[in-house]
Length: 73
Image (cartoon, rainbow, N blue to C red):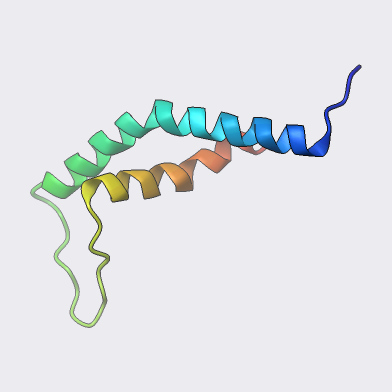
């Protein structure tokens, strides 16, 4: 069995992360757009700052939060 150098393994994992991000981003973009346009969206609460991100930024944030679960286990 051949083992990889630690830097090569980290590079491979980073590449896998970017590929998964590229593959799943359209789904998260659709989810962010649906969430933004849905009529049942919660109104902002007084005194609680709301992040002002674009739909694209929101989709990326959703993807970056969800993708690490693919690397667990």
